[in-house]
Image 1 (cartoon, rainbow, N blue to C red):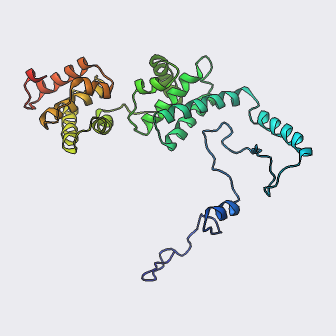
Image 2: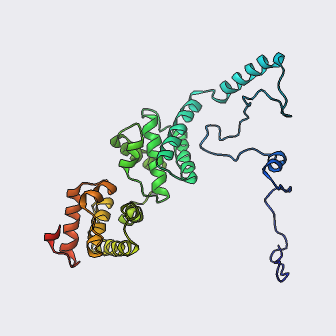
Image 3: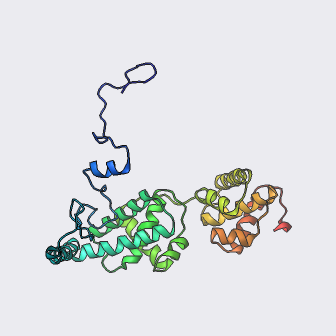
Amino acid sequence: MVCEQCGLIKSERYIDRGPEWRAFDADQKKKRTRTGAPMTYMIHDKGLSTMIDWKNRDIYGKEISARLRAQIYRIRKWQNRIRVSNANERNLTFALSELDRMASNLDLQKNLRECSAKIYRDAVQAHLIRGRSIEGVAAASLYAACRMYKVPRTLNEIAEVARVNKKEIGRSFRFITNELNLNLTPTKPLDFLIRFISELGLSHQCQSLSKKIIKIAEMRGLTSGRGPTGVCAAAIYASSILCKERRTQRKIAKISQVTEVTIRNRFSELIENFDLGIPLKKR
């Protein structure tokens, strides 16, 4: 690896992990590539099996003769049957498609989807699925991946896109985290702050003030034993009043998925324990 400006040799034994060929357009890239898609946990066979295309054309793009079409059809049908051959593979096929559907509805990233699929596969290998719904464990795996990557998603949001209720997801989540020793840290109010501020359309000044309020509340032990979304919502409500960008409790409650009563209770605790310059009558 050599610097183009001064000629300095930065690395003498540099390994180029890219292809040895070059392509100048999409057609050249398609013709010269010799490998398939990368391995993925989102497909039951990790994307390593071959597939017979449904287009009736050969490798050169020519039409397959009518005499061979019936034979190719039979081969194609058996290929699909062989790809999903036993109960475990059928389980994974259904669960991973369900995971992909939920992740798409929540607009989650690819690496998080891969992590949730890996957690589900580990649960299958540890025989944790028996006696539990596939949808419940799949939703719990997605929630665990969100917690692992510190992506702010609540159980209510997961339950909205899942085909099982919140109680079932929570039960499955606690079970697989204990059995697989995932060691997930509890969610904090700060994890939800940026998303709530963005959805409410508040300024950066309001975000900074909310962050400061949450940190003081954590130092004084006001977040202990309380839901992180409720504390975050109360801090945003307080900062919106101080920054004169006031949002109603109903609107904040809708975004944060807590009740207005929870916001009022957390807000009262904040202004009672340290001086924010907001009298209680302004609730």
